[in-house]
Structures are given as structure tokens and as C-alpha cells.
Image 1 (cartoon, protein in one colour):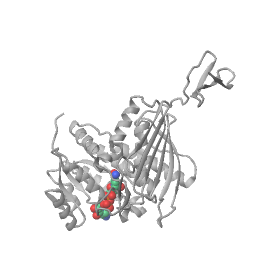
Image 2 (cartoon, rainbow, N blue to C red):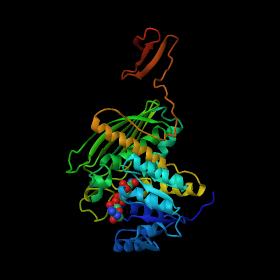
Image 3 (cartoon, helix red, strand yellow):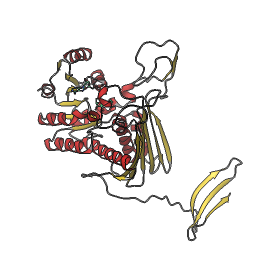
Image 4 (tube, rainbow, N blue to C red):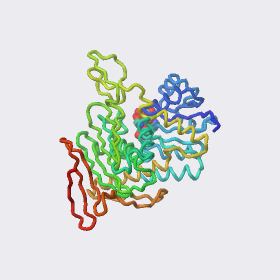
Length: 400
Ligand SMILES: NC(=O)c1ccc[n+]([C@@H]2O[C@H](COP(=O)([O-])OP(=O)(O)OC[C@H]3O[C@@H](n4cnc5c(N)ncnc54)[C@H](O)[C@@H]3O)[C@@H](O)[C@H]2O)c1
């Protein structure tokens, strides 16, 4: 593969624009942010100076049309994603869009159609599918280490977002489900298999704490065509920092991941040091859960490497706009279910994966007339075996 040197237009200088820029500018590759857009000249100028970016502007269209740049990175609020995708595709640029792709599936589908019609490179910046732990877990699952995945549980909880627009349902499009449930849903899809169709959803969502219109807490269950379920739990009122954990259960094993709190570094300080600790950390004294390398721990480095490499190879990255669209379609069903209190089907007008429905039960022969349900070694050393008679269906146990 011939590595090209990409020149990037960074749209947004907030939290995610900063993480993305750190990632690109601090790497030793030849990819660089060439132009940065911010709403105010002061912020644009400071950001450009801080990160050694040659051009800055407060004119978004001028930024997108930077003649030297070949890639536009969208790090602006959710309600702006669609109009930016339109403008960037018109300019013939590759486009990387942060999560969630759209405020709903209709918006996301429009974005997918736009990039495909324009024939431009597109990537969905879902960093949590790229954390080193998630990539390793996904590989182990694909290698058969935990058998057939039956249940993927993904949790993201924190004390609430850091900017006004997240809390305004018109700009954000939703609350905790749209903001962080999108991560959990895509993590589960990676574990269960992106080729497996999400069928239906049941979801509880409520506004428990904050004086807002959108939900600040939710739980959802997504049922997939192979019988697996993806469970997500999200909160904007969790106290204690950024809690990101996953668990995947399979017929032959289990994987647990802790991405942030208690991820290996614990520090007690009575006095603090006056520095940033970690995203959404609430305190800077006492027991603290710092993260050695946040860009790596949250998958940003691996994600950009895949994006740039895929662009060079002329192929889709692991996370594309299509994935963003599927996640939005699942979240639409969640919002419907939270209202109806019923299972709601996931409406996907353009499903490109498998339509196979697989059997759910694992058959293990014990002898000619019995199936094995389970065996267990008891505390006193005896082994117990639970059996089902093939003809009568009678369940029995034997102590060996
Ligand atoms: N892990 C992740 O992938 C992750 C994390 C955080 C945010 N995000 C996503 O990134 C996007 C931006 O979030 P953020 O956390 O950086 O938000 P932020 O509030 O920190 O930054 C938003 C930026 O957009 C600018 N902005 C706000 N309203 C604007 C408007 N009307 N016109 C022009 N500029 C405007 C702000 O000045 C700021 O530069 C959102 O879509 C969010 O969901 C992704």
C-alpha cells in the first residue's frame, strides 16, 4: 500500500475536535490538519497556534473548500452533520463524521446516500469500536474463543455532557441514548457480528435527574437475527467519572472490559496537582482513576490509522457511514419503544448484511438416549451431570 500524506480540514475546536487534532498532529505520520474552522476568530487562532495548524478560519465553507485538503473531519454538534456532509461531498472531499451520524435514521440515510452518490471516501468516527481492548476482544470472538455470542452488554455512564447544545433536544436530537447509547450499540454490533440483522428493540428511558426534555437514563435490549441480544445501559447522571464497561457472553466463554475507571491506574492525592485527570473526572483529589494514554485507551489512534489506511487503499474503513446509519435506525426503534413500552422493530430500508436466522439451542450428546445440559464439580469433589432424555424430555441428574 502506498501511504499518502493527507491534509485534513478540522471542523470544530471543542472536546472532540481537540482529541482528533491531538491524535493527528501528535502522530509521526505525514498526515496533518491543514485548516481548522471555529465559530470565533479568537478560538480558531489559538487552536491553530496550539496545534501548529497553518490555516484557520471562521468561514466553514471556506474551510471545507481548502484546495489543498482532501479530507474533512466533522467535530461539530449533531444538528450540523447533514449540512456539512452535503457541502463536503459537493467539494469532492473524503468525509469522516463523529458519532452519532445523524439525529435520526432519516438524516443518517441522507448522509449515506450523499457520500455514495458523490463517490467520496467516508468513515464513521466510532472510537470505542477501536480501543485496543475492543479490537483484541473482537478478534478473539472471531477466532471462536467464546463460542457463539449470546449476550453483549455495553455500558456508558457519566455525570452529563460538557456543553449547552447536548442538553437541547433540537440540536442534539435526543438525550443519553443518542449521545452515548450509539457507542454501546455499535460495540455490541462488533461483538455479535455486523452482518447479523438487528430485528427489534425494547427500551426504557426516563428523565430522572436533570430538568431537560430528553432522557438522562436508559436501558435497551436489541434482539439480533441469530438470537443474540445487545444490551445497552446509559446515564447522564452517574456520579464518579466516565464509566465505560463491556461484557460479552458466549457459549464457550466470557469477556469483560473496563475501558476507563479502574483500567489499571489508581492514584490517591490529598492535595491534587491542578491538572486535567481524565475525561469527565469529577474531582482532582482523593482516589483518582487517571488514564495513562487517553487517545489510545479510547481508540482514537487506531481509528484514525484505519481511516487513513483505508482511504489510501480505496476501501471502506471498519466503521463507515453505513454503520452510523444502522446505529441510528436501532436508536429510532429505541425511542419508539420507550414511548410505546412495546418491542419495536428496527426499520432498515437498506439492509446489506445476512438475512439468515440461526438456531439458538446448543445440542451436546451425552449418550444414545440423553443430551447433556450441564456438568459441574461440587465443593466435595463429586461431579454432577444434568441430562435430558431425548424421547421423553425428562430432566435428570447423575452424580459421578
Ligand atoms: N467519543 C466521541 O466520539 C465523541 C465525544 C464527544 C463528542 N462527540 C461528538 O462530537 C460532536 C461535537 O461534540 P463536542 O464534544 O466536541 O462538543 P463541544 O461543545 O465541546 O464542541 C463543539 C464545537 O462546535 C462549535 N459549535 C457549537 N455550536 C455551533 C454552531 N451552531 N455553529 C458553529 N459551531 C458551533 C463550538 O464552538 C465547539 O467548537 C458531536 O456530534 C458529539 O456527539 C464524539
